[in-house]
Image (cartoon, rainbow, N blue to C red; front, side, top):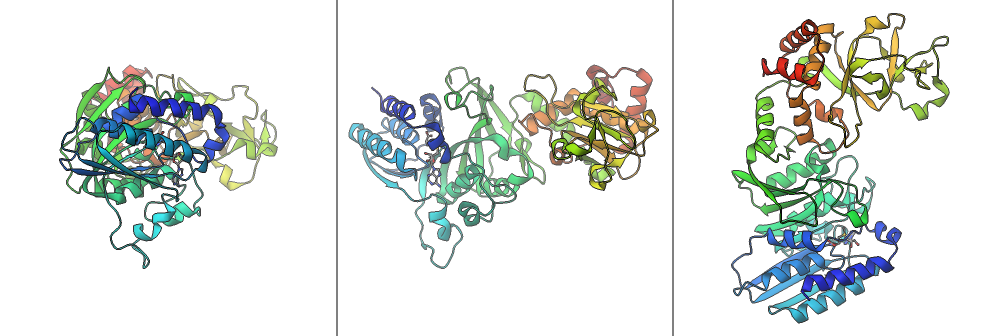
Length: 494
Ligand SMILES: C[S@@+](CC[C@H](N)C(=O)[O-])C[C@H]1O[C@@H](n2cnc3c(N)ncnc32)[C@H](O)[C@@H]1O
């Protein structure tokens, strides 16, 4: 039996006897044999006699095992020095026995150390160059990791230990990745399997900037079916694998590979994407392009220099959290009630009201829940995975509801508004953008989740306001609200 099969079998037995609730406390999910082998294969093995490896959050040691197994075929390697961090006492016995077994099988001399301290907190002084820091902290050639995926509080010890990458709600996975970057020697490589959420979004900006300035992103692997990676463990986060070299020199291109699932890497798609297309903009977003048509989408929009805010517009999230304001909600237009718009009111490009839905009116004098009854483009915040479009929008014209001064929007929709009232043509022009294939594709490459996040939409490139207005006029002229019609109109401007 191969080393990795042995370790996998022992891990499967452990999963069988250890309740999921206990493993969850540590964010513990195990990598499959195929994924671990694929990750180990991504490294460029250095031409050295002794190679140091770090496995932070080692679990049962499957990732270290995959890498040691691969090295068996390298006659130049005389010694492997492995360090595993793992702080869950329940899994330590398994880790020890697995490593003991692997060392006994290995034809290369392997020494290993298991550190049972907290990987983040125990290195805080070194990471922050504090007075009690080790002046020569240990650095590694190769780091292989599947870190815990766990949101933590802003004042959790791990978050406090890494102030340079924390903003908003931190997650252990990117603290692990930042610490690993610190633990790498210059020119060393790390391969990590992590959620894709860090590639966009404000909470991850500091992490992205650090990773992309101190490291060179060389390889990204995507799984086409988003929830298959940890199917046994039902981790629903969309996961990617990244390879980063510790270097300030950026590559010209990034290799992007993709497979359908984590169980079969034989049918792999390989694509070389220009580095400057994948990593771009002030926000250092990472655009996960998989083919040349997506590169084409990005380059068609990226030469536009405006965004919604630079032309005096903004996407905002709906104002009312309905379940927190139950007493104010009404089913009918009684007294001073005003319309409360939900995603159900967005239908085929229009905003239809009322639809006979419960709680579609609100009675309130809280200013924070009300907005002027003016023109808006409403955009759904949530769509189902299998739906054809991520961006689904509807034109809201205030003249259809002249009886109201104010209206409200549920927080499950977004709306685009202006500093001044938007003309009908501008709203229809925005509809052309947000109902086009190009913008939908751009948003998908930018953000893999099914949620439409207003912060990200506000960073997307848009044409000048006069072009948007002209597109709206054209849409009103042709009277065809379909995606194809929007694509046709947009094509003549972009
Ligand atoms: C997602 S699991 C991955 C396990 C293993 N590397 C694999 O790929 O199968 C993350 C591991 O990190 C460990 N862990 C969580 N927080 C830790 C910390 N602060 N320091 C060290 N290990 C930690 C968990 O107990 C868990 O075993």
